[in-house]
Length: 419
Image (cartoon, rainbow, N blue to C red; front, top):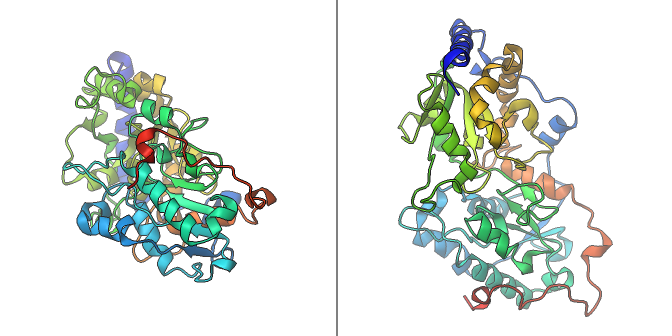
């Protein structure tokens, strides 16, 4: 793929795209030309959760949250940091109530990803014990967990495979969702249809990307999009998948093998200091799965107006009821990666321009970010909107006196050890 007549055609199309960009026809993104999302998705995106729900924030010993961050401040900047910033946001939010009797939802601020390797990768191995310990604490101190066994509680679990608490899919599936969380609502970055690690009723959110840092890398309005396809990242994970084929289910390896010499594709393992600027100069940004189907590139692509090319079969995308992913992105099946050049160069120019106009909508970008301080329509508010839409709770949420559903002794033996 990527050679001969097909490559020549692709080059011709790309050349036309860059000519249009330079002449200003693809001024998309340069924010004067935007398009509002029509219909219910646009309305949902602009919803205001204030007045629609009340959340009680449990006060936990600091060993479950603040002390972890004090020990390792890198937790504030990695892609799993939503659990920290959600806690901080709720403490000062207008939807917080100090009276648990009037709460619609209960939130337990426990940072299960703030245990990092020297290279900054979260270790999930203590997470089940930390979570179990936190649940045991709230169930002993307050009556609210026990009356529903967590059915009116939500937890932020931004691991690779959510509350399955493992970074390798095979082992995550084997573990399944932590038994004590089976009635709770999970707010998680992981989303894949018909997967054991995506519990029904979960809210899929974007991974954390640093808003202030991204702001400092904005390019001047009118900068042309002269790169056709852009990607920076791993193609092989030789440390964890030495035989290849397991990491990214081989999709990233296929991108590299098929297009490393294709002039339309600016792809590399290097991560240059101009990474954010380069995305703003690209028409398409590849967002392939890695160990999990999601990645921060989804956030970066939307914020920088680069059309996300989503290569992750059956992915459930963040805030899918508010963000029209089919309209702003391009979906490519993992098996179709060898045809990627043909697929992208076959997209009509008017389709590209509309996707760019939608991406230029500020509300679309805002929904993908966790800014500090919070702003109307941001990811914090989208999470609250998702929780508000689940109200009122059904009768099955509250247990009858003496009724028990969850088994506290279920799960791997290692998970049951005290923390």
